[in-house]
Structure formats: C-alpha cells, structure tokens
Image: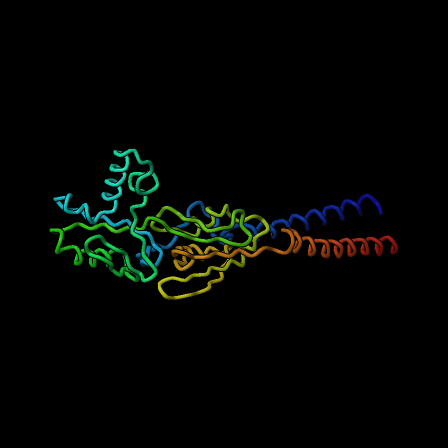
Length: 274
C-alpha cells in the first residue's frame, strides 16, 4: 500500500469519525432542533392554579385588625406562643423544628380536610388556593370581622428515577416547579441516559396519565403538560444500552470497515490495471 493510499484512507476515516461524533452529540443535546439564533422567543405559558390534594402542606393566615382574636386561628401565632411558653419554663424545642414558624403548616389529611381551630374540619382538597380562601372566609366570618385570608403551598414534591445522577424524591420549597427544576434537583442526566425516551407519570386531581417525551425536541418547551410539573409527578429516565457509545461504536466499526474495504479494493484494481 503506497503513501497516497494510506493518506486517502486516513482522511476518509477521519471524515467518517467526525460525522459520526456529530451525530452522537445530537443525541446528547437538549432541544437540539432550536433555531440557530442568539434569541428565540418562546410562546407564553400561563401557569395553572394548583389544586389542593391530600398530603399537601398549606400556610394559612388569618389577618384582621384585632390580631388577638385571630391568634386562635393562626398556627404561626399558636406555635410562637407555645415556643415562648416552653422557653419560659426552660423546656427546649417547643412546638415545631426550632424556626419561628416551624411546624405551623396545615396538613391536608387523607379525607382531604384540614382542621381549623374553633371551626373544626374543612374539606379543601380539590380546590384552588383562591377557592379555599373563599371557603375559609365563610367558615371564620362568624368569629372574625372582615378577615383577610392568605393560603399558599409550602412545598412541591417531585420524584426523578432511573438514569439520573441522584435519583430520589425531592421536596422543592416553591409554589410551582418546571421540568428544569426537577432535573436539576436530580443532578441532571448523565451521558448514559436516553434523552429521547423520558416518561412522565402523573397522578393529579383525580386523573392518572403517562407521557413520553424527547428532551432533544424544542417542542417540550412549549408543552405546558410536560414543562410545568404537577405535585407528586414522577419522571423516569431510561438508560442507554451498556454505555454511551455502544450504539454508535457498532455502527462506526461496521461502516468504517466497509469504507476501508472499498478504498482498498479501489486501489487494488487501480494498481493491477496499470
């Protein structure tokens, strides 16, 4: 095999390997089909109002001019008073976990209810925060004059399993969470993850669904049912076969062998016909 033969074979091999590596990188990039522009405007995505469900932790505050009358309804005030009383008698800890409002959340029980002091149990599951405010207003109005009521969620739980760096359940201290938030909590996807075969398991507001999506596609950014997480969503990421390069390396080896064979045959024929 002469020098020209070797040089040409090497060039063909390098070009083939570069082409294959580009194909591999496309399988690893997020939103790879976005336009090649410095700025790309996404569609507006209204955030749906969250629905209260069993197990949710709610921060409920009753605000009136006479705060002493509201103290019986506000768990923050009750927790603070209990902590102060415990400190006065030298008992450590008190109510909660040491913070000013620790342990002061209202937890929605299995029946979808919260227990409000004086009022008793109220079913809030299935309502939005705005609807819960209206229901609470009606319940405490006989005891509080023109109360201002605040209702908010204190946590947002998502679970990310499978081929991620840190699988598990994550409690995010936020009202809402996005797909980015969930993946970041799990440490993002390693190279061995199937970005093109992600499963989203959702059990929310009485409806159970499974969605499959491709993180390489920019359409994920415009799909609120995927991009906006719901409480207790489960994301499952499948692993690629054995290692990142198994699929590509097999194809690369086969095609490179074919290229070398064709080039070698061509030069052999050329030399024999001289």
